Length: 149
Image (tube, rainbow, N blue to C red; front, side, top):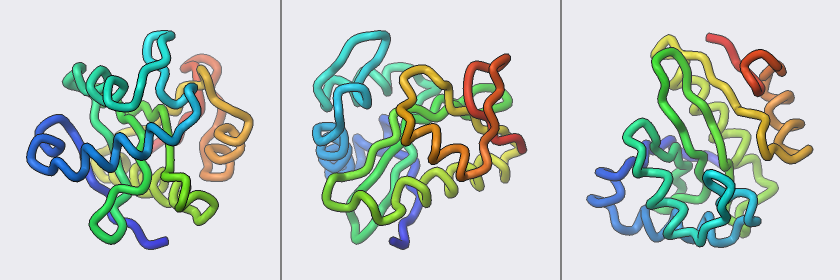
């Protein structure tokens, strides 16, 4: 599916209320693991709000036909982006949206001279297979899968 990468931070979601609604749909359909912050499972609206309380966090989202259909939480650090909580709308799963979104985020990070890390905490086997297929390598010293710039 051809998707466009959108940076959905608190300001963008305030301007585009439909995006917030789309994010809530994405995460409300997700298994609880995808809505867990600091060890606590949250309902989708609370998860989004809590995730964006940290100014270094934003959602990288896949836009298709004016709707967000997938998202991953990005934490911007000095020299890398950490990606967590990848989720795709149930009706668009198994169409490559997650892979495409992760590839677009990696491209954007590389353009900015950043590496990308997917921390290995709470990663499912399918998540691990996806990041490996996308070229990430396990770096136990950094606590996750890394895609170097």
